[in-house]
Image (cartoon, rainbow, N blue to C red; front, side, top):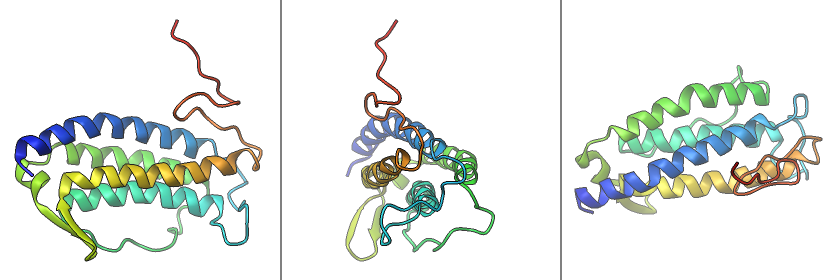
Length: 169
């Protein structure tokens, strides 16, 4: 990948990534307090586990892209994360600064080949799409938990029954 191609990809993906981060914030914020143990099936992650996976994975992907190296992340939820509100506060503190670091990468950092656990080696910037797809997948899972937990489903890519799409004024 040439530097101009990487810059173009970054210029396309970062605005979308900012929207995705804002949407993830809305879904995390919609988890009803006290319902974090909810799971739709015994094999499913709890709402708290899924919220943490979603939030920490966004940070992990950005961190690995910025560092130019994918390493296994921490497993489990940190002791200080006890509620969805804790996850949301952590997300808001940690993800935006990492996104800012991403935006400041040099051409060489954006184009450097980065191996992904022996499965593939891509230019660093290309992993942003995988990051977004991963978040969309898990955000969809978490949003499907909301109504059964007694919460409201926010608008994601259009209106929801709880937050209908509003035409511009």
